[in-house]
Amino acid sequence: MAQHGIEMILMRKLAAQLTMPILLVDPRGDLVFYNEAAAGILGGRFEDTGPIVRGEWTTIFRPANADGSLIKREELPLFIATEQRRPAHRSGFVRGFDGVSRFFEGIAFPLTGQCRRMLGAVGIFWDSASPPAPGTPFAGGPVDLASPGPDRPVELLLMRQLTSYLDTAIFLMGPDGTLLFFNEPSEVLLGQRFDETEPMDAERWSGLLEPEDELGASVPRGERPLVVALREQRPAHKRFAIRGFDGARHPIEGLAFPLVNRARRQLGAVGIFWKRVVERVAEVARA
Image (cartoon, rainbow, N blue to C red):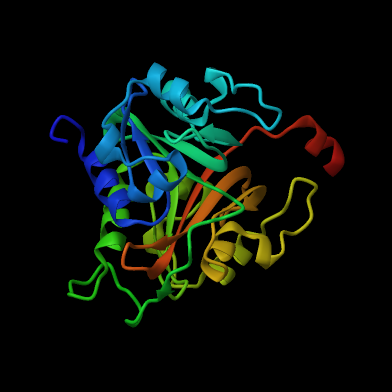
């Protein structure tokens, strides 16, 4: 992948190590890679299919709504991520290479690197009725990505490096639930730099942000995406609001998923969050 930017190269290397279904498209929307986990949903391996141009892969997979109607191109998460350069969430059905239609839920977010370079987009998706199997607990002690050592999982290092390049807010939690890193775009939501944040676990950290649902009620711990990903080892998506450390309130949408490698080790969790436009109904309910 020498023709692609470092962000795309890192994302492909990371995806190849994970059990979460992940696919990558280039700036034109051409499908350039999907990992082994995604092959189970798409009904075929990337090694057998190779890259597929945008018009062809949408025709092959026929993404559809629950009523069977095709999802419009401009409503597809990967189209939104590449053309509008913002994350998007969607559920529906895809028809695999094997002809079998499968339900999916997922998000896509743009790979926008330094200097606002558009490098492509990432799709993370799963069958909510049959999410990826959980991993075994990490055998080592607390992970310190800032200190050199042989016990630092390569997947966490790749995720940390990739995250630092991107302009989507991403949080990285360790296998014990400790906050390992969040990138510069996350600082806009939190009102605080990572190097100003003391070590804390996911439950304490999310509690400090006072998460509220769309009606203004506190989000229980067991429903917060990162907590779900760590406790239950399954992907979780939610729309809610947080209050940053600077007091600013942000309506956001987010996905968290467990970080499990191909050796079935549970290495932590990743949270991907983005600001959303508040719907009028929610504002009326809060008034």
